Image (cartoon, rainbow, N blue to C red; front, side):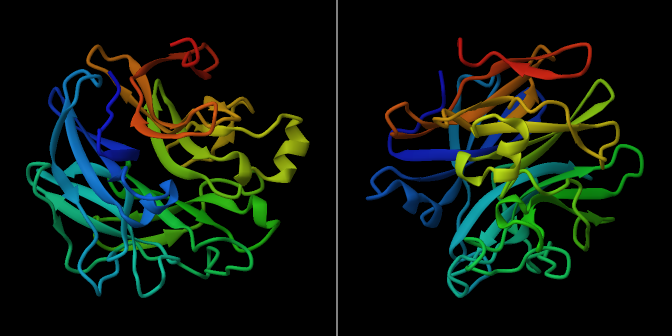
Length: 324
């Protein structure tokens, strides 16, 4: 059954696999909040474990905002985890009260066992670069986008890379969303590089994930109806949807291209959001997302069950989620 907490909403999530155990880390906030939108500013990072991606055991919370004053004293948001030299590294997004939550930065917490986490003393580590990416301008956009780091080790070079939700500083405001890129040799010192995606289609490209399957690299991201660029709607002739889409490349750093205009999982309602792909116990690829909205506009805030992913001979992905 889907992971649903009786007293908390859950939304964006990421995985760490330790042997046969799947650890999931997720954003959570109390259901007792007066308004659903307040969850973003009353958030912590929860933790559960499963052997089959269906039945979950709740573990102690992983992270919460730091005491004031701190760079992450207002929120601890979406991130990712990798293991290196026997240590688990969780990169996550933070905002501060001092900046009214508008400016996002990326920090690090580490753990030897996935249970007890220690924030790095030099946080934040991956800093927004205003020379390459859009800085805060509330007349143009709602925040300074620099969040949702997906960190991985390059399979050939051995260095580390982060893909980040960001925006460039030129072009139509509704099409400036890109996936930013940072590089590191040691996971502590980071160089900010140009984006790995082209702008023009979306105002924001959130919660990126890179999945390597059969020699191809799939870059997943999610977006909303209201953050779809007018230029995309005109180009495709399709109504905008809320959900998860993907780009594909032959190299982990791109160049990435749209294989199709059809979203991997999406609809106008926003039934599922911020999907992730992971290999299940039998080795097959599965898709999970968090359940967002009901047809009558009610917020759900719970994890879906896994849906099988199929891949055709051309390398296109498909998820049969509506019939499940």
